[in-house]
Amino acid sequence: MDHYRMFAAYNAWANMLLYEAAAGLNEEELHRDTGAFFRSLFGTLNHLVTADRVWLHRFTGHGPHPTSLDARAADTFADLWAARREEDARITAFAESLTAEALAATFHYSPITKPEPVSHKLGPAVAHFFNHQTHHRGQAHMCLTVLGKPSLSLDMIYFVRSAGLSFL
Image 1: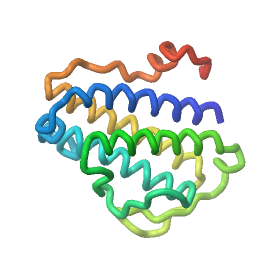
Image 2: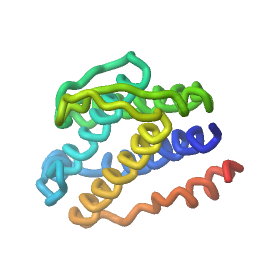
Image 3: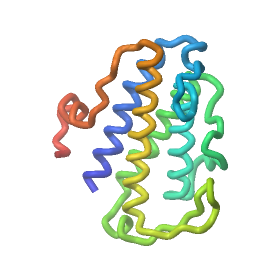
């Protein structure tokens, strides 16, 4: 279970760096279409909060329950950042609750994009959850690059080194 706790801690750390970098942008820059899948940095960050809420609701049965992958989590950057911190705390609590038995158990849900029931072990869904975050943080990083902002070092190994953690 340390593996998932490490991913939860890394997720919160990487999100903090990303939001700190985004805090220096003006409204036009936050919402500028940079060619990302969710168009702007704000749209990409919004999707991450929304998708995390979708998955956490599936995993726990609690919390916000968006019905689309582009549901608006917040209208302002400050509110989005507050929502991000709240979801990161929920992710950490969820990771802390995981057991080997839970990860090996069969998990049932219906995807938003194709609402037909799906069943598989919980473990691969949790792995996807963390991988999905990394995927879209990469897109957010690209948005910052397009906007001419300095590159961020978001590699997990930098987290492990900088946080002085002994997860590995």
